[in-house]
Image (cartoon, rainbow over all chains, first blue to last red):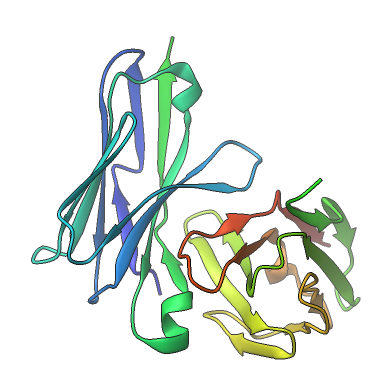
Length: 114
Length: 112
């Protein structure tokens, strides 16, 4: 069963605008990660936020985590056409070997129009 | 080149045939994973391995077999392929201490 669900399923914006994607999950987590997937390619890791962190930045990316609401958001600022891709959240839960397993959401398809 | 590779990239087979998808990584990462990606389901974990000769089931293991005799290789075998196993398969790896997973380019498998 899916742990994470992204919202919206699809998002279309103009270059230069900000894009916000949300992820909700069901159980307690150790960390939450965001990945990008360009069409026909493998996933690329973007950023990881631990359960005791509330916000993290990496370049034009800003991730927030609200463990009380079991939700996270990914903000891409000043978007570019090259940001067009699917974005997935993935959660790691449990202890020992269980933390090695990521559970992925269904993804948000972002289209940035030039 | 260093990295994680998958072969074949595309495969068409028939129901009932055995198929093996290969995954090779050059980083000597401890952990390796197999996922399948289907529309509406995102990525689902099939099997994973913590080290050579150590494997464990993921969310959707039925119909699949894995082995890991060498750290760098993690083949996935469909013993008797079914149409429901038509999917894109991704292999991934990570170190023993980090959390980031590195993905291969995927294998698109069609079972007729």
